Length: 168
Image (cartoon, rainbow, N blue to C red; front, top):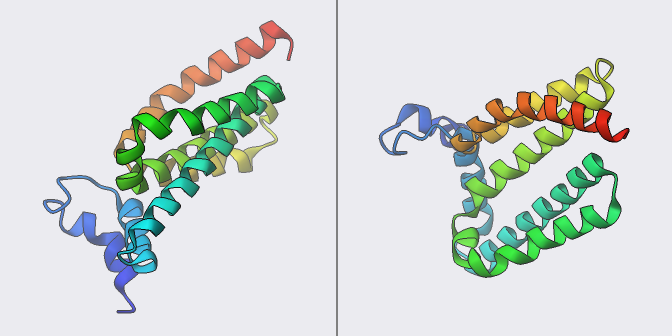
């Protein structure tokens, strides 16, 4: 059906009881794309989940490199993230991956752009607007990202004082 993507995006608003009162239109839309693309091929779901997991590890590496300017620390952080969850969350992470992983991908992108904005403010207004867009995407993928609103002001203050203290 040609309107299926729009229907999938609007479904959480139209039928909140069916979604247990979760408002996640981006997550529902991404789930629809995943189902239409991968059909019922479970090995493809696992492969896609591992690709998303690796992408998150790359994002963590980039964020740590931006924050600390240390290539080894960034590489180790990414590798630890990628390898540690392979045992503890092997079943959950691959089966319920889309909402959690995509929300984390959007949230990390928002944090990366917000860090760029803090470093280059006020000249980096596009980074600020991009951070807002990615934050909203993460929020509408999984509601738990609402906590990022409370974390970012503290992050901004701590980041600036830490950079000033260490002279970075």
